[in-house]
Image (cartoon, rainbow, N blue to C red; front, side, top):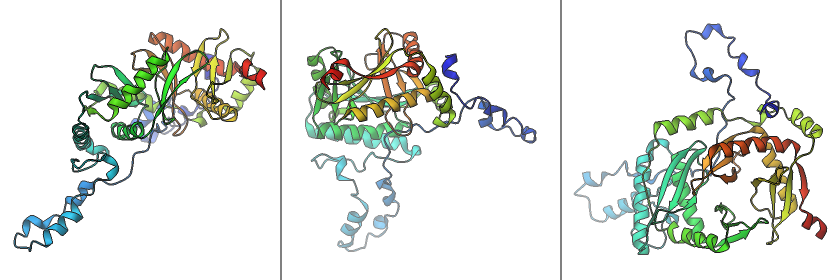
Length: 382
C-alpha cells in the first residue's frame, strides 16, 4: 500500500482550508473531511428528463362545469389524460395511468407505485404462470437491482446506480433490452462461460456452457414477468454509501508524472495478456507473476480497442476507487469505478472478504510492474 500511495498528489491539500480562523464560529460540515478528496459523481445510466405526466392534471375544471355541453368533455379528456409513452407498454391496453420513468428524488414512493402497477399489468397481459421479482439493495458502490426467479435464485445483478430512482428506471431499460435482443454465450481462454445481452448486460462466470445457457434463458423468461418489490434503504447502508462517495478520488488527485516514472523504473512482474477469443473478439487478463487471474475484461472488437481498454483499467486503478461487493452467488468481488460515465470494472469472485481485499492490493501493485503482451498462441499466428 505504501508504494501505491506515492502516486496520490493531494495529500498536502487539507492544510489550506484550516487557515481560516475567521470562520471558526460557523463550522462548515464539508471542511471536517479535509483529508478526503472531493467526491466525484458516480455516473451510471442517465435518467430520462421527461417531466412526469401527472403534472398536467393540476388544472381540470371538468367537475366545476356540469352544465357544459357533452361535446366539450371529450376534448378535455384527450388533452389532459392519456400522455403515457407507448414504449412503456408492450401490446396491451390495460396500462397504468402513468409511466415509471421519474426524474425527481422526492417522488420515490409514487415512482414505485407506478412501476408496481405497470409490472402487474404486464404479468397479467402475458398470462405468466411463473412470476419472479425485482429486488433492490444499497451497496457501498451504489444501488443495485436483482432479478430473482420464483424459486429464489438470483438470475441477474445489475450495475450500480447513484440513486434508487436510477435503479428503478434501469429495470425498464433492462426489460426492453432483454425482450428486444437475443443473448450470446461466450467462453474465455480459461474455459469459463458468460451470457451477454446486447453486448451490455453480462452474467457471472459459469463452469459449463449448459449452466450458463440455462441461466440466460431464465433471465429471458422472468425479465418481463417479475413483480417490483418496494425498497427503502436502512440508515446504516445510506451512511456507508455517502462515506464512500465523499472519499471518491478523481484523476487530478494523481501525480501522473510519478506514475510514468514508477512504471519505467519498476522490475517487470505479472502481465496484461491480450487474447483473441474463439469468436474473433479480444479480451485481456491481468495476471500475477504466479499466473493468478486478478482481472478478466469484457470483449473488444479488435486488438487496438483491447489495448485502450487496458489503459482505461490502469488509469482507473491508479485513481483507486475500489469497493468490495457481493455477487449473486453471495461471494465477494471488487468493483473498480471507472472514470466519468464509463462502466465499472468487476473483479473475480472470492470466498471471503479478506481474500478479496488482498486481491485489490495485488491489482494496485501489478499495474505498475505488469507488461502488456499478446498471448503466445495469438502471437505465433501473426
